[in-house]
Image (tube, rainbow, N blue to C red):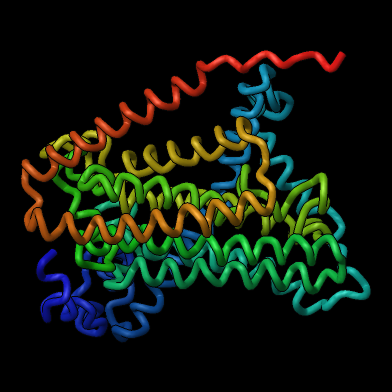
Length: 413
């Protein structure tokens, strides 16, 4: 922490130098093991471009499959919460139901409002899908399962994900519908507001790791579960929950799905969309759910590193996917448990609570770094002890308040 502003720290941001040295990623692997053996006479630049196209093709094939799995999982989770079976007709135990729904959407009529802006109407879903797809380029799914090891990876992810709101506004404006426009403006206010506590929570991680590279953040947590950044300090423990709740608001999930409040604005910014264009919004939403969960796992939960030091237990690609799906399940759990917030409650939570808490976390992380200059057993033990005592206190206070019986009210008669 003491070297946070040192010259060596800023030296890590020499982008050109790091690009020339990066070797442990998918592009380099495909170029060295596939492109060069098959096309040995290819120029270096063309080989790199071809390898990048192959990586893009892999992710274009995989990312649209996420909604097929996650939509089915959410419908099964909702059915379990509501004591029913969920989709059971198409395929064994209903496993092919979302595939049938996708085929249905492909063959549906593509309707464009006559009085709307046709260019922006067509462009909006592609912008949202492209930005959701581009985020995956900087997420390390494994030791060498990374498209490009940006030394400013987290900055790149935040910049790309911020463009998604432009697609939302374009969709609402171009539809020439007051319901769509209202939904898009709500979404813009919500996303822009919750980007602030989300970014401030990420800043606590950057202060500890002293790097913006996603792989370096994961490698800093390679000593087992107690070296994960969520347990490194009490302030990063709080920052994880601020980050996760803000991420739920970013992807417009319940209880923060005001841009799609069915009782008020039908379906939000994509009310006028149908067919495959609506499917692109659907793919982008569930891809964003997986992406923000993967970012949370990378920043706070050890990424692809295992739970036990020296052992690959719940590590690598399978461990990373399991942790990510665990956070996705929590999002689904909250959707079918909590009611929707009002707009004033939504904004109060962000501006009056999350942003001050985030600044408190930054200040506390800086003080913690001055006191414990090295991450040793003592600092991690004290951190875990403080977190444990605080959780016991919160549990005791919450349990006492929930167990309190309401006072009987006098009859008006």
